[in-house]
Length: 209
Image (cartoon, rainbow, N blue to C red; front, side):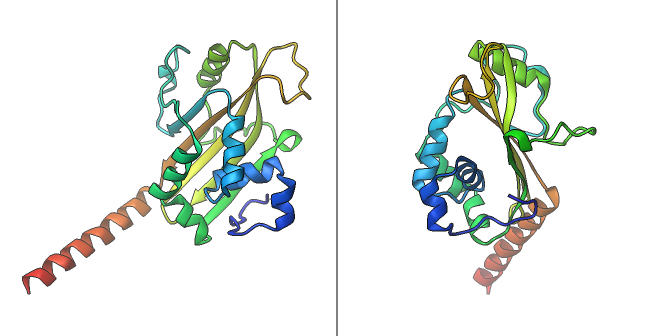
């Protein structure tokens, strides 16, 4: 998936039949995903799921017993409730969702020299290993989207926790963890707040006439 691409409303039948995992995850995180693909994606997350604002405190990840921002009940139903309630699905339907990154496996480049605003702190990764009782953790997929209608910027990271003796080429061993980090553009939020205020004031004016 190239940077700057838009989420497609309809995918070719061949893509659906092939059930390419990267394509499934791409549509899943782009919040415009068929039911079957969404269910397949959710079933693969057998580790920890974290959904964190960019302002999260790395110091709060000092114990694996209780993890901040943990999502314990990710289901197909809760996924579609989020799609509807957050308006991210609508954003993608209107082709206002921009793909910043969508890579897996060998395509994953080394970390940026400068810290990414939505980067994952080592404390978080350490807690994932401790909770899953594993010695190793590695990034296997990364997605990044800008939902421009909402001013929402999200990075999705898939981390596989394994033991040091696990064969890296064997994807069925270990736990797949999902860590999402998001932030909002305050300018877009301010614009929406201004528009909402204008609608309320206009409605009040109409009632007083």
